[in-house]
Length: 306
Image (tube, rainbow, N blue to C red; front, side, top):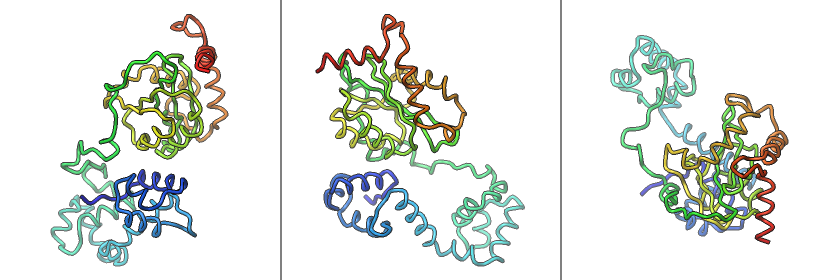
């Protein structure tokens, strides 16, 4: 089955290249042929350096420029003017395409996407819908997910639940991990991609005791297999639409919202602000722990392990 390389695939390729993997090894890891990886790296490297963001951008540019009709539509002012004239009369792109027979309706939609001022002429204002028949189609990341129902119960320190808190601009998030049995919180201000989550876990949680991690089904946790290798423990996923299955983590996210309210911009804060809030939360006496603090409990639990 034909598969396109996605943004998360590119993040994986970048990280594996950093580890010294060959094209064949990367292909086996991500279920691609080695020549697919070779072409991807050659096409999307700049001055011999491959990065996922630049690779995704270059791929999108090539895809856009490969559309012959799109180039013609952009070049021929008279054609563009006639199409837009018909759209102002509430003709849909498909109706315009079927009547004129010289341009695809998808070309018109792509032009409108790049020129949002014309979305007002679309019946639904340009709101996208999922393509028919694609709902519920699992990605290869989803196929390899472990269900929360497979997670064994454990009172040992190192049972983590993870999530992200979204800022107003949605490009920055606070990545949170809560140790369930002690209430100890680890958090970081970072980007919103799967690579950002993986790098946070690799850097900030690798040396902490870890029995398991449980996430929700957000795409930012797509690199869960690499997270498993990094922490040496299984990653589980809650059922879709079931935040109560990670209730402890949802509760501590609410505590963080005291400092970073919903709808506020994260562009005006730094990771130091986040760490300050985390220290306050970890130092609060908790009723469920007989008014001991998460920091105290976590430290005692680690001493026992040592």
